[in-house]
Length: 301
Image (cartoon, rainbow, N blue to C red; front, top):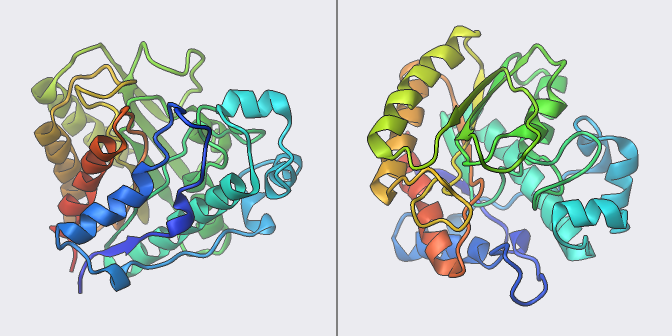
């Protein structure tokens, strides 16, 4: 059985020309995975958009209604960083649907990946930081509600702290949130995760991986989960526009292999989402995002 990779062409929505969020990367990730021979064009698993009753398990109903009707308050849109058009709203719903399905497939197969997801700055009441819906928050809440998982770990290696996920699950004992991030980076006001590890600038590959090993041991000490959502953001990369941790491409691959290998050795399924990655060259960002899929394929049954 090959790696389960979720993708939808509408993960990509039009933004204003020159926008610093590299939206074009999502189509390129899929294109590169096909060119690399990791997956054939017809083998992508196509997700369905989440519905209103699924979204409100993680977000306030008023905000969900604003997104679904593409009528998000201007103040919130400014905090997100772009206007919420119908296409952007659908993208958020599809990305959340993909993370939910990736979780289900990981429970069945041991591992699955999405070519989107990891929008971890979206809080319960609103979006922020290029994040409309918190796809992992929605996915985890729905899996718990349906009884498909009893305990979930969100293991977040994006360069930015997972404040939105921490906010959504601050009172949910069944979800453990772990964030390894750049301490001096966005957001300025962080929300306490179950475990936060803020790193200094320019930490580099070897020091990062030492911290990672300890974080994995601490994470599982909170209680073995039924499922891990792994945010494999590539913005810790040394050439990322918004990152500060100076990891190499090989360092990112070692990171991903360490995280997935740790949990799979413990028999814990892993659903991988893309997280952040920023470059003026969308193809450059997309190429880095393919790393997680290639590493995950090493663990596919």
